Image (tube, rainbow, N blue to C red):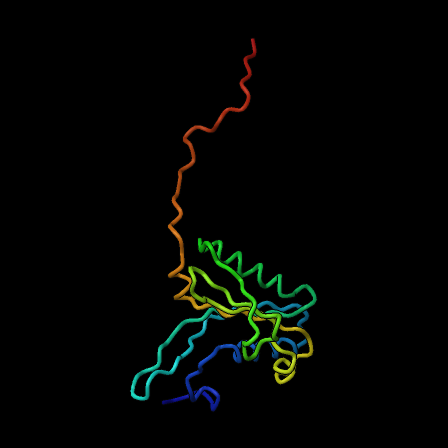
Length: 170
């Protein structure tokens, strides 16, 4: 009811434009290597008289000389491994709207899509004033936590350290 500006007067259905705006701001300020993340809310519309579904998304965005699809994919893999999500897969897709066809993959865990990763289409990047390759990943936080495997257990360190060499001096 009290938006901060015209662009925040409606609920967003995707957080990707917000990430691209922040990447464009960094590009225009001549930052050469940028890697960002954001936890954002998206609103999925429902039937006419129902409230939208509100979901948290983890957005990753990057560009620069040391950044490519595989470096961002590596960051996502480290995140999924640290969360103890096993059996995740990356599968190529060609129909993601803002992403480059052939350079995009969906991320699935337990047979359910938990995210999308890829290179932003050059025309979309040009609309934001970015003249280099831009990469982004979208991960559904609730679906990620639903796919977390069994919890890791803590094993305390031994009270006495192991002896690898025993010396007896007479």
